[in-house]
Image (cartoon, rainbow, N blue to C red; front, side, top):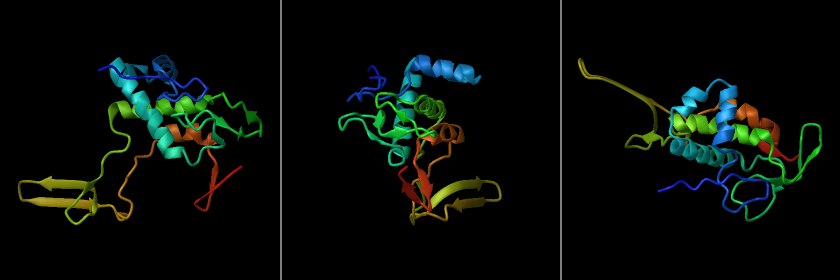
Length: 180
């Protein structure tokens, strides 16, 4: 079955599922000397990774993006209205900042190799397992648990992607989102 792969063009498409296409990703990753690792995956795998990257980006930052959605029917979170850059210049509503595509490519690069949000493992009592070590000869077992099992989801940090996108996020003050 073919992957449905539709790049957002700035009009708020109802069926768009990526911010960057294969050509965008290839060029971006070539510029950062990572194209060989990226091209090791098939076109289908790279397309799937780009979809996962855009989805992860929006799921992670949707409540922190500056501005408001351009249309109530658009699938992705960008384009957006009422977005100002760091110089307080209003960004045209039909313009998707380059960093949004770049960040989605960073997440896609990671997604191609391993899950962005791996399914956490829990023991029988509901404690989240961070690491587990077993030694068969002379029987040794070590298990490390997450002390914050209250939050069952554990997301890996992706500093490259997060640094790229931060200028398009509202600032957090004391855990609260501040509209600027």
